[in-house]
Length: 364
Image 1: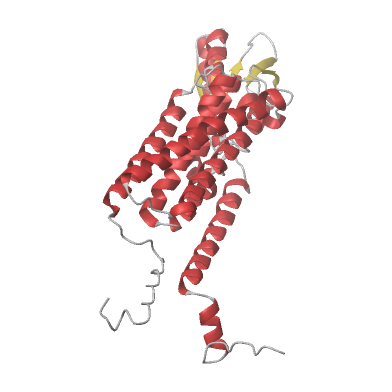
Image 2 (image 1 turned 45 degrees about the vertical axis):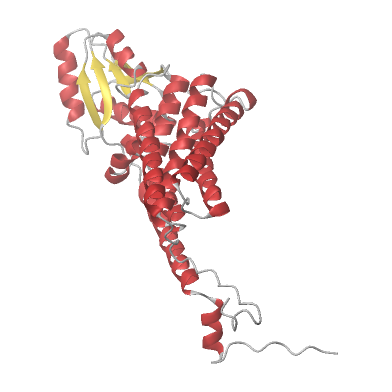
């Protein structure tokens, strides 16, 4: 016995499309398309033409007038690739490189024809290579040569100094995925402040575990990052919690759309501006400006500071991450406190139960 297929909605193929693709689905698909185009624009815009600009450089020589003259010559290079300044002696120049106050240092030898350039590939191989190229060409134009010394080299297992960046990206992914799962399990907006606190608590526990496991994999297991395990663990916990709290805050403000907003902030804008593949002096102005203020950029800079610079330059990035964590938590709690049972955006009302036969007539 064959069963007769149930007829589709009346009105033909157009009605079938309307029934199959809801308004909610159409709007979300358009949002995904916009997010995809923003992703392509941001990554290609940041990486398609790296150009050195404002690379900080300490310059020193036995005689102050020689250093001052060199600074003027380097400052006048076309395109302003360098931001040089004179320092008293080699010890001061080396200290500034190790403290992450400058990207490199040029030590001039007036008695010879060869100068020394101090770089730090632990801050990014592409940055140290760009500095070598710019200073090398400037020295060659003066009939001089330069010998390069790496005072903070990237570890042998850390190809081009990118492991810190990939570790932070992984932490960021875990942060917003954990927050998204917490939302999907029981509604994007927590029903009340108590549930918001529970979600933030669960996120914190996840962040502690993710920070430790990511550090162990990158350090002892793979041998990619030689930095302090405790330092990287603390950083990872803060990165994961900050990104997760931001995601929970966006979900509190915009429902499920908040997940897309978190991806826009962290992935679309944050990752290409993080200074990973190309540190800040090689990025276009827009990405160079926003990078230090976003979690991936702050996390990458902090991870490199812990790994190769003994924690120097760590305060600013950690304050940025702490601010995001505090802001995300505060907004999440505020949204929960003021929600008062309002429905999610695009949320379809639950169907009312059909009355039992006989109860409607009885007025029950």
